[in-house]
Each structure stands twice: as C-alpha cells, then as structure tokens.
Amino acid sequence: MANLIVRNIDEAVVVALKKRAGQHGISAEAEHRKILEQALLRLPRKPFAEVLRQIPNVGNDSDFERIQDDRASQIFD
Image (cartoon, rainbow, N blue to C red; front, side, top):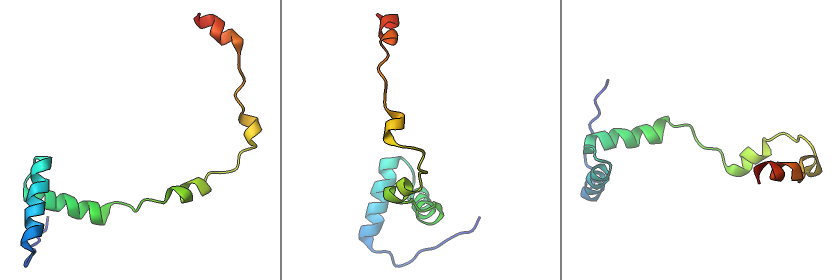
C-alpha cells in the first residue's frame, strides 16, 4: 500500500475529520481513508428517473390488476 501525505489542511477541516472519526469510532487516519475510498472508488449512482426509464415495457396496467379471491380469506379465517 502507498502512503499519502496531505499538507496545509485548514484547521476546521482537521477538527471536522476528527469529530467524524470519533462518531464512527475509528481513527482520523482511518476516516480519511474511508472518505477517499467513498469519493473515488464507488460507482456513481444513477438518478431514479433514469432507472425507471430503463425498465422494459412488459404490458398494460390492466394486465397486472389485483383480483380479489374470496377463497384465500376463507382459508385464513
């Protein structure tokens, strides 16, 4: 693994990093690694509208209407 040194960080950023690390119960260094991994290695999320557009058209709404079956209610009574 490589080492990374970051210099000239604003004190407010350092304080926020330490606070966040404390909330997660890890060291500031571990929190720093976690933030970098999340920012750089996670795949970008697609907007919900784009996901919906990718759903194939599989029929009309009426094809999926719920039919009331009285027999099911008799079984569980």
